[in-house]
View 1 (cartoon, helix red, strand yellow):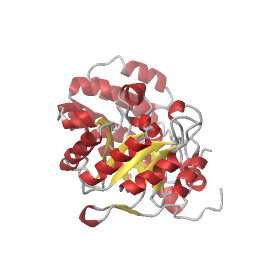
View 2 (view 1 turned 135 degrees about the horizontal axis):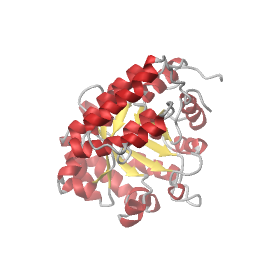
View 3 (view 1 turned 90 degrees about the vertical axis):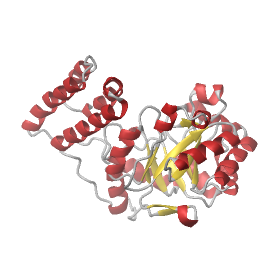
View 4 (view 1 turned 180 degrees about the vertical axis):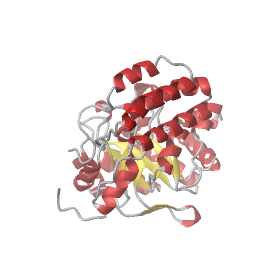
Length: 351
């Protein structure tokens, strides 16, 4: 498809000393509110992701040791590094929260300068709002990096809006503050998740710093991952929505970026077993009632693209018993498996 030279990615070593972290394959699961909970991170990590990142956690809630917040910060044991992402606008609170997260086992701390949600960016003056206050941003980065002995990374956007594309300048501030790696989502805050991610702009950030840079936004296929790397010059990719219902996708991207060959998608029988494992883990972690409710979106994502999936999702959303949902999963998948149905991975190499 191009003159790409494989491998397109190589290992990254972040930080120094005993707590430095080596990313064998910098293909990273993005922090996604309400999605990258512990069961999902554990599954994606087990499937071969290079790094998984927690949901965004409010630093003030971590410092207050809110029970639900501490639960969100649990890390996946074994199989490579895990990162906890923190958000906040108070340097001291961010530093204290980072210490707590490291105490809970985090191998890295990620700082959020990218969240566009009004409650965070406007109400709390955190997330992407910090891209408008470079002095405060710098204090947060430096204070947090000094507070812990693990690598601290930063996730940000291109800027607040297209009149203020200051990510290259913030990259230099981050490097001076002791940040170990940058991830850039190729949109502004004002775009939220609309429009098309601008991978070309990420190249400007890469040129502004000697830090490793990770490209994020619209990476939903192996081809898009390769194109993002070509256009950005980045050192790796971060994948969010592309992993919905496909916890194996990051492994497939790694396979493609290192070999130039596409990995075969799991069979429907294998997919069903992965789904059941995931669904049971959700219920075990959150409890039966909450797990059934929280698991609905994941079950729905797995089923997309399969014959009869709309009806399956409609029936599933009316059930309030995990056992009933599992029975429905069998009833939905087994006839397709029996007929030898093969899912066509429409994402693979799609432009």
